[in-house]
Image (tube, rainbow, N blue to C red):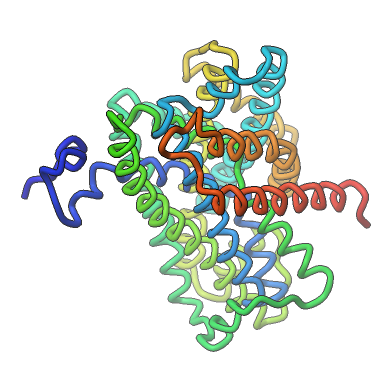
Length: 416
């Protein structure tokens, strides 16, 4: 069986479902940001405290993610440039430098969550102390980056395979948890149960937009398949949009399964679970060692995959905003120092994950607002410029996400 090339598809030499194959990949790398260890604690807490109540929030978050990631992908396809590169061209040099600094800080905070999550996975699975587990994680993250030396397709295939492993891990746990079908369906009806449920929903929604995924996705599509004219670019975007929908459905299913498992296993027993090690041990006690092992493996694999994606994002923002570059292995070494120090000083891993999400919140507006602004500009986008309704919805989503993150920051620093 032969598979078409991108050129075959664009030039009308191939037809059928196989046409999507040359365009699959970029969205799966970006989707890793939506299943990083920072999401684990939020989803498990929501499920253990409120059962299936907030499933609809994850579904709504996924719809927002599809829109945002499609805008990022479209920017790269239309311009042949990524978001930081266009920002450098359109903004003052001093503004670009400030945008680069905040982007690096956000990526380091994100990397902190991913690195600690992977180390925590090793600790839970093999009872390895956190510091040695972190050092093993470091070696693993270098190994994943080595896939890049074999080309972007090899890296996409490797990351996509890791995502599917996480899918299998949580599908297995969901099967063992025996969730209530009726309650699960009811969870997709929008409703709340008190102020704290609203705060948890805010946490889920506010963490939807990952700034580094926005920067990276525009980079993944800018040179991958190049359209000769607007017609070809529209065709490329049509296939990339399918890629995005598939990847976001998978990421959403993983997040939903976390909440469903917590609802079926913990909420039914009246347990409020906030720490990942407590979740692991409780799954072991209630569903058996196989369920706990699959949970730990999911955490480990998600952390490793997310960490490598974060490193790539850092390379993109540096080259884009300030036209500088450092070897990616040196970057990996630099960004792993903060989590190693935090782990070395014995900080609580789950609390470190929470704080990393707080730092990440600061960078939301700096990525999302320029993205909508640029994709709404016909001079930049040409025939792929946003429709007016797309721009309108984009600004509504931006306002929701930015306001929710500001609210989370307020609750973190000023709340009880």
